[in-house]
Image (tube, rainbow, N blue to C red; front, side):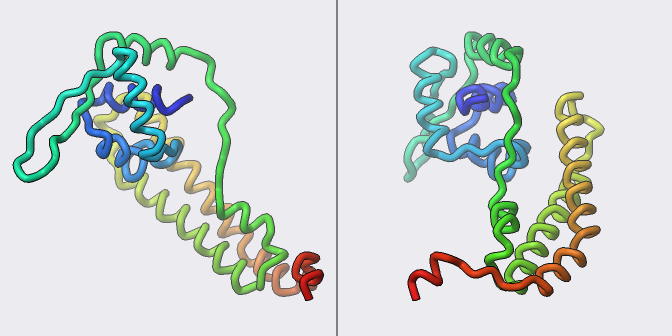
Length: 186
């Protein structure tokens, strides 16, 4: 799914500025499963505006620049519904932690253990945050996404806890791997 479609989805929840849309990806409900930067949000909004799928109004603020507020047009709502009905692509997990753990054999054991513990703490924190949200008044789709996230973070944290001692032991017992790039530079 592209950023334009996600922006239409965010605006289906209510009018918003580009900044407010970005916050939905940082701290809001989309932050757990979709990433979008200002560099992708504003061009998407510009294209949607040009296509008549969103409207733009400006609110005056004394002493500050006008606030640009985007809203979903009826055409935008139709396009959003069409896009949501299209077949979904394959989910992709992107994780800097997993990249680091994949190459843990190139690190000092204490560094790989620190990264492992940070990753575990992150999952425990995310599971705790998901527990704090009350699903009672959520629509069915949002409730499913919340529950999915909660179970996913709990399962990931449990896996990390269950395998921590083994990982630390193996990292401490492993022979240091010679880095051919470092060795060639010497």
